[in-house]
Length: 69
Image 1 (cartoon, rainbow, N blue to C red):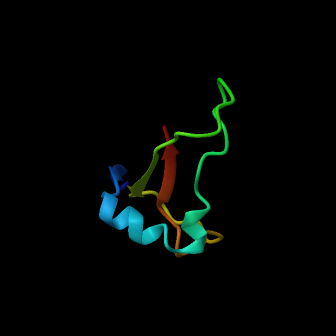
Image 2: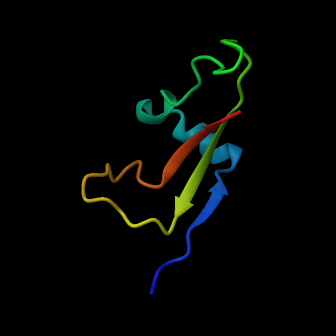
């Protein structure tokens, strides 16, 4: 039986806590791929559950992805 995959946005309070960690604080946009703008981006983090873990993945960041607006 396969597991269900779910994607949930991480609440702001948890995002602020995660961004204190140097691994996560580097997750930020550099420039817009469409217009080249380099400022004014909102950072949103999502947790992805139900995806089989890779034996080569970093345990601390497995399942957390950044989606940049």
